[in-house]
Length: 171
Image (spheres, one colour):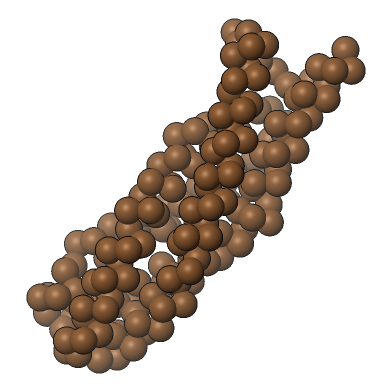
């Protein structure tokens, strides 16, 4: 009962499995790419929140955000539209893990929207302080989310992928 593939031919299922393995590799690579600037984002955000009029910090925060945002958006889209949809279709996949991942994605999306709404370069000090605080919170939340994906989500997806192959070989 591990692998239910209603309406999917074994050939398509194998292709889907290969696509998911490739996706996991790409997501792990993006996690690393996202993780690298997080310390800088957290420190810059925390400092800028205290000194929102500092022009140099504003420009640095804008540069960091511009480097993180596109990868983050693509990463979350791929996880939501491909990986999590696949996992949700698997009855054996832990529902609590999916709920936690969806909550984390929701928090990241909310912070992303808040940060994107305020231009660091020319917003008011009050708005820059808020965006800087959100940048720091995003960096911390993203670091936690990446750690959780590497520890729990990705290994569980791999187990589910390989369990399907093993169960068919045993029949």
